[in-house]
Image (cartoon, rainbow, N blue to C red):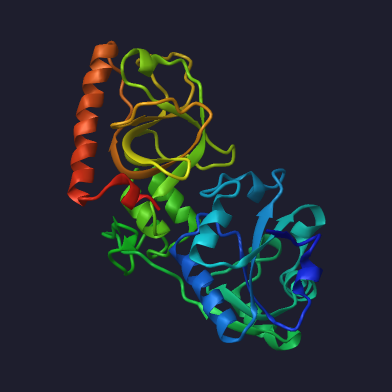
Length: 339
């Protein structure tokens, strides 16, 4: 990753031109994927450098304080899976938040990154208060000497479902999803509504929670139901509380089906602490301190309060049957499902 304030001018020099896309790329969803693929294809066709300007904001701003679908380095790792573009980081702060759209184009895209071709989604927003639009980019292309390529918005139908990484239906939908248009807000709403299939369809892959396994109170282990307690990035968006059928990868190798509970544990813990705990099926071993990545595939049920550990174990057994049935229908292994 290159920092726009340090290495950018040095990077942008040379004989090859620069083909540039810009945005927050939160979630790296199917709309972002189309932009990145267009960026890469265009750069190759014109023998240019494929550059992605990834924008963020300091935590003391309203935009910076928002939770992210992809936090930390998650977005860049997903971007690199799509195409080997150079990611340039730009964190807005202070006076930079007040850049008018034309100032943003001149300062960031032209003066710093020397863009020859700009690839942008038709619903892009930039500059102070998001006043910059695709129309402004088009109007100023001649003034600043760049060519503009526009990528159409991606949509999903109300009945769409995630199917092994493929969006199974396309179309429009009236209502809260802005006619089915894919964006980070729509994905967050689907996750809050427990509609994990719709969220995954918009993402083009299962929503994932990653981090380090930390020590908990070992209540599950003492009850022969060991769980991995996941510590995620503080800016990570956490979906609706409840129990999910999941696939967890340990490090860069082994993957396991499992059950993941997100939320409070009213049956065994009165502190009200919100945790993310995964019970891996068919796994034995110690995960403390290891990095895991847990993908959410199906919402099973809400959090419940039980009368004692035996009742908890009985429900976990029922949840396990549901999860195994779901994964058995896919007729595949956890490793082949993992993205």
